[in-house]
Image 1 (cartoon, rainbow, N blue to C red):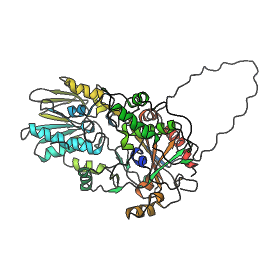
Image 2: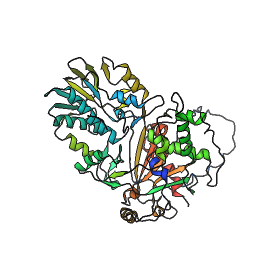
Image 3: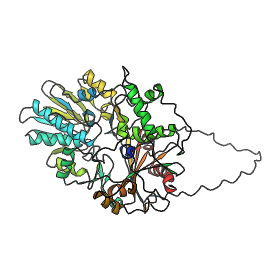
Image 4: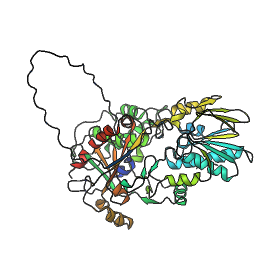
Amino acid sequence: MDERGAPNGIPRRTFLRAGLAAGFAGAAAIVLASCTWDEPRPTTTPTATPTPTAPPTPSAVPRPTNMRRSAWGTDPYARGAFSFAEFGSTDQMRTRLATPIGGRLVFAGEATSSLAPGTLQGARLSGLRAAGDIAGFAEPGERIAVIGAGLAGLTAARELVDQGFEVIVIEARDRIGGRVQSVVDDAFGTPVELGSWLVGDDEGLVGALAAASVGTIPFLGSAAVVRIDGTQVEPSTAGTDALVRAHVWSQALPHDVSVATALLQSGEVPASEAPGDDGVSPAGWLRHAISSGLEPLTGAAATVVSAQAWDPAQLLAPPPGLSLPTSPISGVLDQLADGLDIVLTSAVTQIATNDTRVSLRLDTGESLTVDRVVSTLPLGVLKTDQVRFQPPLPRPYQLAIAQLGMGVVDVVWLAFDAPFWRADVAADATAEAQAEGEASDAGSPASVLSVVGGFPTVARWIDVGVATGSGEAVLVGVIAAAQATRLEQLSDQDFVSAVLADLEPFATATG
């Protein structure tokens, strides 16, 4: 099968072309230097009385009542959030990964999708494609193993079972879902998704969600940008335009380079640091486009993303048909898994193939022999030595695994007693007006918030209450690339302190 506010909060804003497209994650990468101090030694030398230290300025940002966060980079069964085009990689490498090996082993998962990598759509399509490939090789009654109980794996398993094959699904985690992780928590008033959350306009995916009684609603609202001092500014496309010009420049090269290299060699950087009429320099807008656009969309820094393959034009227009689930996305996984033979908490450590069979070794010490295998191991796992292949994978597959990148993007859900960041606009009234096509851009409250200037930890915040029209005082922060990797190492207490600091500009924002 082929894969085809409150007072002083953020006021209403016009719709920003780049806002929603770039707004679902991101943070600029910064280098933090750690300092080591010598232990103080006793001394009899009198010292001057130290000047009293002023107490810290009270924060205008309240503590959240509840918090949930992801950490995909440190998840041993993911090793990242989704794949991206690292410089030097090509779409043909994804196609190569999707090509069956000897009729016995087929890879699936978002990294094998050329049409929609890094998405739910891509994962689902890859599962359908892999099932079709296996069915084309297999004889009736053969036993098939599917490694991984995420969307790709369960889609493939369901297709194969429906075609009469004996299928066993082997999952390393103690749950199904893979990088889809739905959490039921009434404190947030809406389904909490720690993995994939936004739904595109793919008819097959929307249909599968609907069949599992997972409804969707349009993503509402607009975008707002403030400076670090809280002053709201009209969003500018200056940074994105520079990325577009660097991308166009790179197309004439005989070889690929990183986005950072393309910016430098095309003359887009160094950009002017002189503030414009809005108080933001061209260089500031470029940093904003990278930290709130490129990084969340790839999970990586501009120094490793392909200038030729990554098209920044997607930052200039919001994706069509973007919607949010009204119930947990895991519902579609539960429906696919119903009746399947699934073994949990069993990680595959070795895949050995020959001309007639495939042998699997598990971390439990057990082994299993089947006729054919669909592997949905994430690219991040394939990059490690967690799973051995016997014989080793053919060289083109090894090259594809090494060259394609695995990005790190995390989300944090924060619930508050009141939406201190929001303009005094009834979210439900806005939702009703937008549903009737009556709301103008000028009357649309902000659902996507970002800061220009400095080096924010969280690139974008999504106001769930506005985006869904529910009015809930809930924010979702999206953290990407080096910032995501850094914050994954923090305790919950330190993590919350770090992300709340990024909300200070919104607590004091002025129009």
